[in-house]
Image (tube, rainbow, N blue to C red; front, side, top):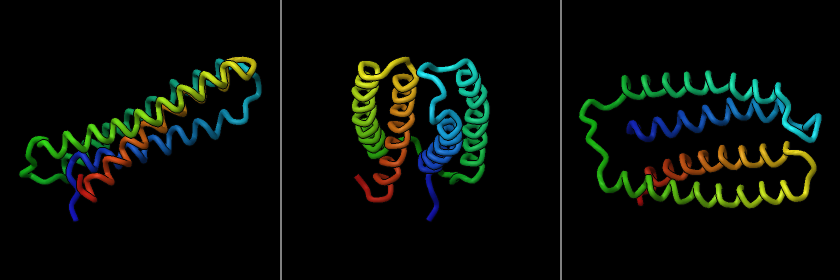
Length: 139
């Protein structure tokens, strides 16, 4: 079964986020201080480069291996996109609440920043994964 361009890009997104930010969180956890250090900020910025490169390479591969008669997004694609965004927004909202709770209950900013960032990454993962499920199962 051949995947559409959108499905391929969702797979690229999932793989890139898990690899790059999985490495980031494995590197910075457990925290050495209650605040975010300069090395952690530098690591975050440095990891943006391979993340962008993975997205570019994935898009090139998706275009090259894609169907030649690819049509523009139709109503089904837009509905799948909206449902995926909705699912990701639930995770992001829950993460924002958890980050605020961390800000109130812990010293320093390490947990607040990283819970906030983790909720952003998880919401993107949920959005892409749910859209893949909707493409396979139908809307």
